[in-house]
Image (tube, rainbow, N blue to C red):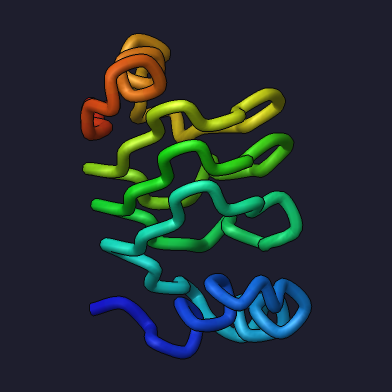
Length: 109
């Protein structure tokens, strides 16, 4: 279940407080979050669970998401220049999600 405090900090764009909270946790649960159009570049999302999240038109540029959980997230129209995605998500999956809003699927390594 999503962490209500973390969700509120993201929704209110309180990235400094969010980053302090994220530094104290092994995983920040933002699953099923609605982040349409959000600028998330200043948020530390390396240990975030963004599974089933709706990220349409969000700005993710430059983020390290290599350890983030993204299964079922939708990236339609996101800005992703410089994003480091998990190895379990293929470039084809990312492209389909960007273009059509399909939910991301992970593959086994």
